[in-house]
Image (tube, rainbow over all chains, first blue to last red; front, side, top):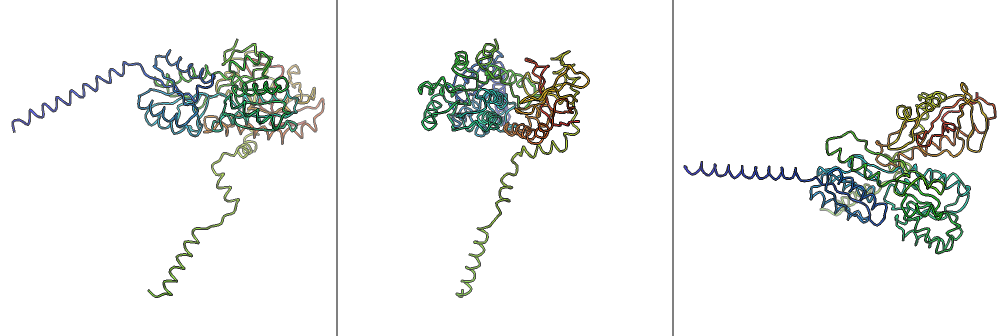
Length: 319
Length: 206
């Protein structure tokens, strides 16, 4: 009976030691810099490289450790990244989704683990998952681009449309914005509409194949600039670069240069730097307690043509 | 068990299973069920045009132009409607003007009250989000999928193109007096106050 109080005393001391250790660990964690993850759909496209790096750079300036994860346009890879970053205890995720529908579960998993997600450029089909979604107004950009397209072609001609990833809402917002204009001109005939996954090489292959059955096209409308460059390469190979107009979307460096050199007709400029910086700043504000944020924040895009190219720089800076 | 009873039980069981396995439904009912919960932009716009349009508050066109000339940035920031981060501000505007010219894409009015103020009434190239944003018919934050939100603009423009413009274009003449109500976009970076272009919602030749 006399040993029991000693046993309890030792047990209490042991418990106290454990509590002190845990508290000490937590104090160390509080002092350690917080971490922000940047998950990007692909780093195989310079526009997304700028997006990812700008987000990471702004987050670092705000005092966060950052890591960039490349999903390689693969939702399975993206899910793997989310599992890892949840386990690693990141404070927030700056997220460029691979698939509007397929990426929702990743955002929800992060939310369940207490990690807020901020979407950049592309949206997910969820209002509850991400804190906010900073997205380019692709639809309006392509409405303006569509009107320019119609006027450049004098309301008649044959054209090809190259779509991006079919699971991405931007692909369809761009296509629908464009068609909300051009479909009202009966003498504009779309001879082919095919996906080239936002990829330059695929765009080249697709257009080469389309031109075998439709050699008499007047224009190519591309859902992004990488595909516009691929299409232009295919036209150069076919000796048609001077007679077929190419239109892109993004405002990437190579296309802006090509517009200056009058190789490509126009693009819609969306600024990855601005989108990424805004996302990082909102994430920081959220982590500091700000909760009053719009669920979706569209950012206007500008149509860049051979006439106004001098006013702009690639990736969204104005001259 | 006697053979007839056994046969009866098996038959009843087969009939019951068969009856509950196969059923017929009309294609209309099936399609309605399939589309339930799918956003219908045309219906959404029809409701707006029918119920809310007549009482939609609007700024007088002369007042709008005057205020924009005085303080473009301040007036747009305070009174305009903007979507996200953009230099485009939207207003619902109304007024009466005399037809000065009829062009391929616009009818040009000189406003009653201040004939120096001109307004373009769009009769072709009716595209974009001007009406959706000016009228505040919908908020992007309420839409899970931005494509549904953008479909509202398409439906609104289709409505204007098919129900408002054709009769007006057919009847309008130089010197006619026209009442208009519609949406207008003002870009603060490249303002074109001399050429404000109204996408019409109401057009009456008086």
